[in-house]
Image (tube, rainbow, N blue to C red; front, side):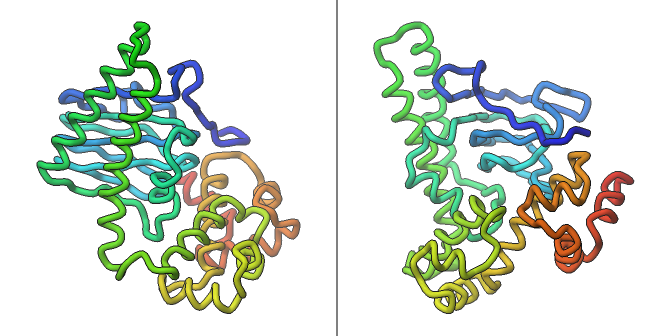
Length: 290
């Protein structure tokens, strides 16, 4: 194991920050390294669209499985391994985060529920397939010096990811009565926590950053999510701690400092309280395949 978790980007692979591949009845086993870079993160988004077949991937300690007509995606920074495929036909698209419109990114990055694959109907399948095929053709033509250029590629990418955003926002908001102010606040809080959890540890600091009172923030977070604001802060700390314990050789003390805790004894107690076992025990279990 290394001292850090490798992070890959699209530099040297594509000049315009978009990689698109058509998949035709492909099967990839654990012995096939075509898609497997080992445990790693990506600095870009990955969108996988299945027209048929079955795909499986371990993402941040959770098994993600999709089959038949389905869509799923990975956020930049999530730790994952190579994807396993069984007779998969569909599309694989990777895109730099800064190429996506803010309105689209907000759907993915500010979600208040766990990301899971979503089954889609024939109508969505046809729309996504058509758009992906046009995007692939435009990327090839641009490489050959077509006058269409990057503007067309960006427009098609916006359309493709915009459809993803519609699918996921529709599914995830099905139990929420409208995009009211409370839900909007929770989204802003969640994305801020993902960015700042190493330096901002208390609900008060997030309330100040969002220009609201601590009491109002905590009441809204609990009302919308059923969990406290502190719970969500600790969850971000916990998932990153588990990543570093599982996939690096950093000591518990070094991980504590990496996550913004100068008192590693406090960090160990916090981890034990949330996870149910000390950091060292969690690491041993992972090393022993438990």
